[in-house]
Image (cartoon, rainbow, N blue to C red):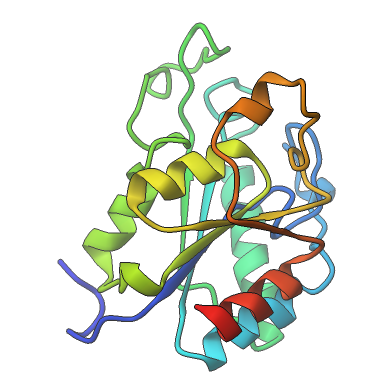
Length: 199
């Protein structure tokens, strides 16, 4: 059931680690979470221009038993609340807690080859079921090829950010042969300014 009215609205999907917050390899504790500079201003600008704002993040540490669901919810509650206090609204947070056994999954119930782990588009498809999204004017902002692959599968462009866990990849790396972003920016605010101007 849609939670929006019938009017289509453009959306921006943000990856979390390296985009919303500073990149920490396998972030698993509340104390490790630090916002990236400019993220509140970026989200607020999208709000002011009529965009829906979503977070779509792989969180396999749940399946790997490196983080509890309670801790993840604590991080996300803080993230949404703190940004809201700065006038920056996130409409919904989507996360994938799964991982295959081959990928390190050990927690029963979370060990699976799911449809929501990026680069698959499951989280974005779920958002499209719950909100009336204008895909023609929507974007994703990420820091790795998985975000680009996810956006491409959903049918929207992806902008890349420096300073995260991926871009730019060395030319001779296997990651450089994976899907690449439409453009790469230094920080979230620059990327959002481009979206508002060109989207």
